[in-house]
Length: 190
Image 1 (cartoon, one colour):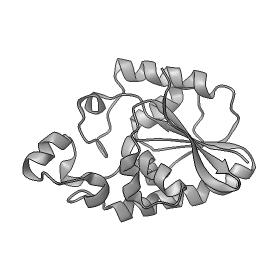
Image 2 (image 1 turned 180 degrees about the horizontal axis):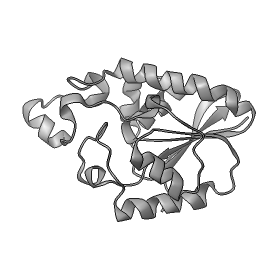
Image 3 (image 1 turned 90 degrees about the horizontal axis):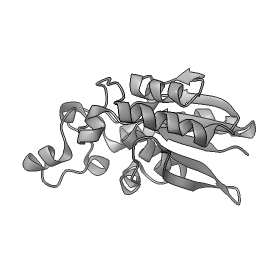
Image 4 (image 1 turned 45 degrees about the horizontal axis):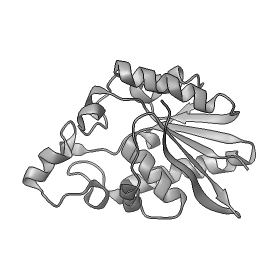
């Protein structure tokens, strides 16, 4: 049985500053490009039957620099839609809404936890049968991939908020005695 390898894109200017970035399509910083190249060392010995990526430039560029050939892009792997919180930090949001937590409350004008959970479930339903043939890479974004981890082990999207995920990190989803499991989480690549 194969594994799902989650790769978060390399650093962007907004990720470095803690700004929420969903539909804004940013380039990687120089550090982000260095991080993405470092991913190559971690995945070079794997044979992927599929490499599925968010269509955002930062994810596709990370795949390219990591030496991975994307076989499919899907909007289902894009970052959580932050709606009116796009481009601002959690600290700024907490000035007007001190109790706000994305993974519980969602974003005004954006997505709820249930909505992103449905998107991620579609991704997992598509790639799980491929694991009979080998490994699958999913290349995407911090909050969305945290939801992938939660949904893989059967938890609601909200539990993704308990899984930190840095830029250009590698996480591995697999099985333990036939049940879904998180094998590696938030492992830096460089």
